[in-house]
Length: 254
Image (tube, rainbow, N blue to C red):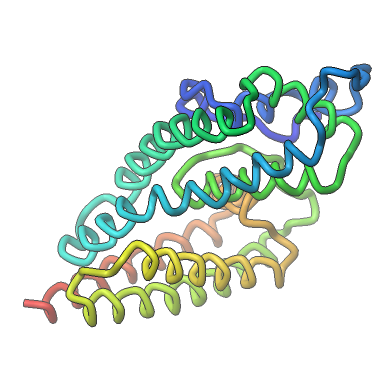
């Protein structure tokens, strides 16, 4: 059973984080590979992922701040197109950060990839968590990873999760807009990073109440938009409410 398949745009980036998790389970987990003297230590793999996790949000912060300003000034802008732009830039930034981090550890992509595969095949909990955390970060910046939706995720549960997720998102957006207005759009990278981290924490907590991870959420939304009229209606009503809210906000800023 395939647990994750990366979209074509992500594969085109040829980055470490995308290539290995696009494999099927029989390739990435439970394989016959044995560790040898050349396999990178698991502690190094964890450190590499930790460094990538720390550097990427800081590198992306200026772009995300710019997009928040664009959305506040132009509520009719197509957010889906904006997020595609963000995802494309994430791919480019990741390759640069990846190259820098690999150089610091004096390793290459093939060695990191092989070691990550091995520790995943051994079901190493910390490595699996690091990989899943990275996948989650990718989806937060607009990337798409098609992960199998849990079979016990019902329409009722998904609709309830969306209500809580939307409430958490609205709370986070209100906090961001207050800070943008207070700073007249001149937040520092550190301030923006703190706000975005808080926003993601709120939304992650909302989903966790329903046993859904942020990595699974985009795939779940996609699946229920196609299969559930009730969820699709709820989603579209929310999108319209968000658009109206942004229009009112723009009028108030004039």
